[in-house]
Image (cartoon, rainbow, N blue to C red; front, side, top):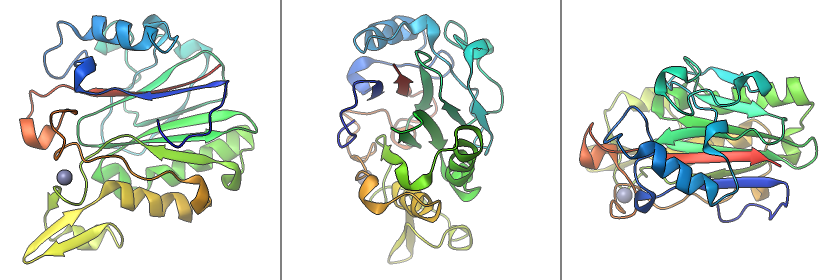
Length: 238
Ligand SMILES: [Zn+2]
């Protein structure tokens, strides 16, 4: 992840198409476990420790502790149910989010230290899941929003993400119009949400490249359809 402070006690990464499908449920799953093993071991993570969610485009955040280690690491059924974000202050427990067009948001507090990783599609963004994650980091870890750093995984951007007119009622930021068409930029929406939650502007790193425009590098649900693979976002405190 470009932009994040180079902290010796933090692992943060986002896979690309070249690393293969990382989902044990979506897309071609036969090689997914092996893809995870190779990608995560290159980061110094044991894939058997991975904590995964059964993401539902909701707004539930889970405080991950030792008992969650390995949930969903070897079978999708073991994933933590009904969850779209993780926070933790525990060391050596890798937390993950899976996306193909949706936005992943990485949050890091070097002081407490603690981390958060959130799956932000439009529904979760509309439900202001980022503010909920930061609120829980305040509650559980005494994290202060002005000490937090935040960055993004690659997602579909405002250049390609056409949405229905209803979205004008859902979002006041991140929308752009081109003729009669309306477009949404999830990283702009969530940059605003981070600012509202109290994160400093200079602590928020710029959005990444559009998954739809750069389909050669990333999986894109909108470009490829339901059978497309998923990329992994992963964070771990050391
Ligand atoms: Zn694009």
